[in-house]
Image (tube, rainbow, N blue to C red; front, top):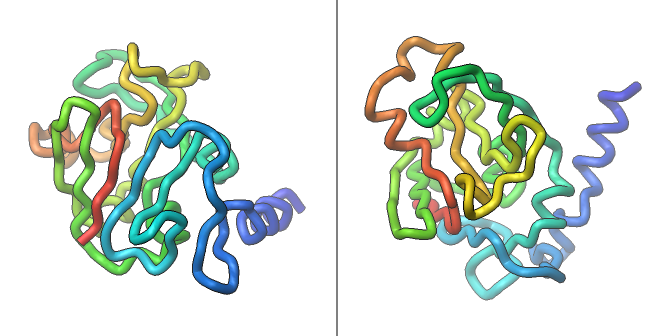
Length: 166
């Protein structure tokens, strides 16, 4: 029963598209911008999200250690693949940019294969600019030995502000 309720909420979430392929407009401060090969927009050729729009998305959890935490930490937030799918993203190259202009390039296949999160919370606490927020790209490092390489650690961008898809 809960699966059907979650599916219904997913299908009728307020960030879904209208008949004109427009998403709802953010009513709060814009905290994430998605640009590029997207079929659905809410701002010219991009998508702006506020906190309420992100919080309306279904969340997942990854428990892992990583390059910023030696002990297993609980990260929660929407799967990045869910956001890309919901927006009708066509491209396979995902460029994630942080507040300080640090940029990492992720492949759509890695995002899907590893269930990469756009984490909004760490150990139950909402991420803020002071602690890697508002978003942190999280891979399940402890679940896949092949992820324990510098290349994947460098893809774990924190203070994510924009995502560009090609």
